[in-house]
Image (cartoon, rainbow, N blue to C red):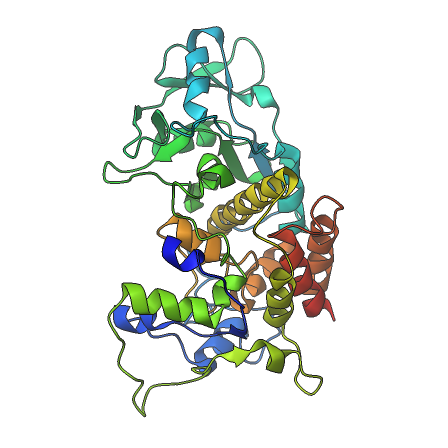
Length: 412
């Protein structure tokens, strides 16, 4: 990846369909009839029976999906736990190691994450729990949560830690233990609760790290912000130049596949070849050819200079990465699984490079599910997201500017 990013790229064409990586791995994308059937239940409006996977009633009838009710509809977001004096040394675990002078980028503001989620899940209230809701205390392996916010109602939950395998951070926290702590403070009116942490995380012994995890049936999720720090991009081989939407650059995709995968077989006559040839950027903006949302986002992103990003732009990039992952993990709390239909923020990722290529939006299939539970229209939701993304400090940034172009094309 680092070799690819070192060469200039004209970003002259867009690829809309799966790369040869997918074919080599044996993935077969659902055909157009299957995708249409997944986003619209035949004979019913999408509001009555939103789409739904292979079986039109599968998602609505899923036993692990918790319905949104009048008494349980609020999304709560918890800021990173505080430290008492006994464990103040844990704060040093939040700083990366081996970066010389250290990090320069200012971490995003917690209220901005809450505001973004309020727009993404427009129609449902999003509230921040008090910063005192969780606190590290009593030694390096415990986190304490204040269930009733009184001095007599503290509950201890043990949090396991371990050294960070790749050495970027000193120690990591066990994700499963943090999720248990989140469950213990889940308010009665909560539909879901998201815990943000600024420590590195792991789930299984084989993990190098993870950035987020959800117990969807239990309506809790945890996300770590630390791996998304742009100051770590070089150390983690992050391809910043071809982050979404320029991850759809046909030249970049071809280079990735040719350097890291065996040659894929040419599609046979019985295999779909929809969109096999990339679409040039010039063709996508022709007056006789309708401009898609991806065209608009791609063009907008191509106008932003990646070579000399300001500290404000880097902070916005960090925020955008966190926003995408928090919206993804909360999506699991709504019973939405990893998406196999389109480019979608509910796609699964196995590394940070894949994270940066993931779009911030929901595909038609998963958006129909979300609109069903939030009871708003696509236009209302998109207007809310535009209002956030067009804030002055975000208008010319690498994540929010192309997302704004994508949203405005959808609205038009």
